Image (cartoon, one colour):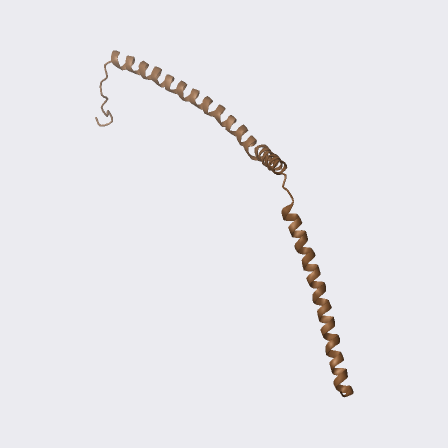
Length: 123
């Protein structure tokens, strides 16, 4: 075998050895990652803890929503309800005054004789 061929062959063999070592390292690392994933998937889940955390989260969010949005609206609705009751009482009193006034007018018109007035400007 000639020296040039021998050098070329040695270079190719070194390249193959480095490639094989790199692939072996990658294979080992992938196997470690898969083992970690299997360990994580096979670990038992504490469902009670997760459920309690979810309930606590929902409760906290709902109390924040109540404090920020619903409570101020509830106060405004209470004010509007008071105003509506007040306005309803005012309307009833106006209706009572109107009935009383209508009664007075009816009594007045029933007891008087009304004669139409003629335009006296054209004599």
